[in-house]
Length: 212
Image 1: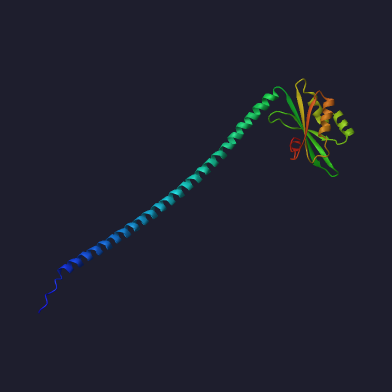
Image 2 (image 1 turned 30 degrees about the vertical axis):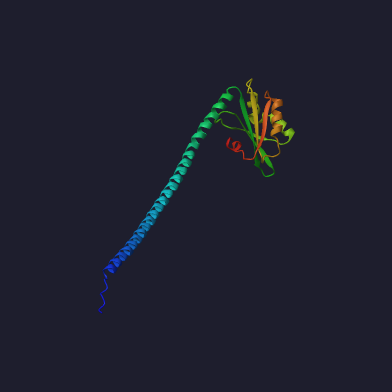
């Protein structure tokens, strides 16, 4: 008996359905991969933009700090000028009530020993210095020096009158011996001035040389 031909139509339908399912799955996978790559690319772009923004922010912060520093440096001379003006105002007010005579002793090397150059001024803003010769280191020689007028210093001290006066004796560290205290004591005993202040400084005293 002849066999009945196999009906392939249902199998074809099934195969078409399976192929459609596989095609759909494959297309879905492609879409997912494409979206993932797009997301990765967008993330990389955002990270690059963020890095650029951070770099700009850092540069701006550096420029701001430099500007602030430059501004502070520009203000410093103004502050100093204001402070110096205030100091001059204070000194001017004080000198209206009292006066100061400055004596400076400079160590000057000589062939045999260091001699003590002397200069003085009645303090005022930009007042000139005057030389008072050499201050002897020995007590007897210093007494004779004072008896002879101490190079004009004694007349200046005695001319202060009744105005309250203080004498500041500033001695350079390299000057011979420590005679600033002794000179201050001599001033207190020989003049109307009873207030003297002696100080030894490390920096060179140039006024005695330039004041000659």
